[in-house]
Image 1 (tube, rainbow, N blue to C red):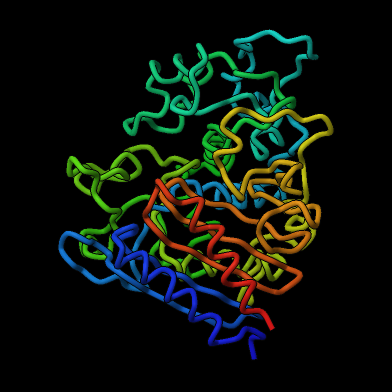
Image 2 (cartoon, rainbow, N blue to C red):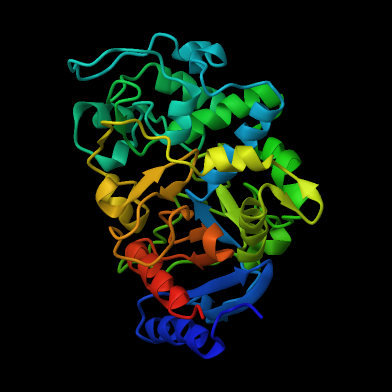
Length: 386
């Protein structure tokens, strides 16, 4: 018994089906697992609305920022191998970042960017499209996020740009995990696609996860609704007609709901799944603790993250690559102290609730209303708990 009411779980299908019928979303896949058993599986709507191709449970999605926890885990495997320390300056591994400067001076102590800063988005990096400061403009002008980059060339471009904030002072959602991906490459000796495959995907049996789409899987790629002009709003993440050269640690992964469930199930089980250990249980505990320092400020884009925003007013903080709930009673959506999650701009979302032995996957390609569906799914799943 999963401890979830089957009739109440069916409300998930009803809610998402209604929004497919209303033209709000193309389709979605939802998985709910408890105690290591799949309690609910749903594929609703269309994988590709214009062609009327139905959604499939094995559809491949642009995971966007759900790439970040994968890279965080890969980096933590290097910590456990003694090759990487969170305390170290990033310049220990990426010397080109030794002389970065801050774009706007503040009366705060200056220190080097640490590896821990990369994990928790306190390095001072940002995303060019998410602000209007002079630093954001320089990001946009520099092609630092161009799909023609490699991780090596991306870091070289980033090293020439000013930081938006002094390291350790501000949670600013940005390119920190992309930089961490380059650290993984340097220490692993392989490019990020192969490093993730060797350290996570192959050991966990995540057969459909990676940065490329095989020709025979083209008809499994889930697509968003087209804009009024007929454009695909997620082509910037992955264009099957022009696959990117850049293995973006911040947002380049292609994956399925069942593949990602294997990853989150490993996290829930303390770092091991089906006899394969990826991380030690204390490393998982470290990863899912709040790492934001006292007095931490928050960048202007933080609130746009919705229910994954690591804001104290929501009773949340941020760990090593994931959002973490640290206090009861402040968040507008149900959950437990210690639950952790992350999401993608494409509409993807996951959360793990150790207290309830629960993990949930949402695969959706709807960037505009993504925050709504994260909150909706939480309400529906927790409403089904017995």
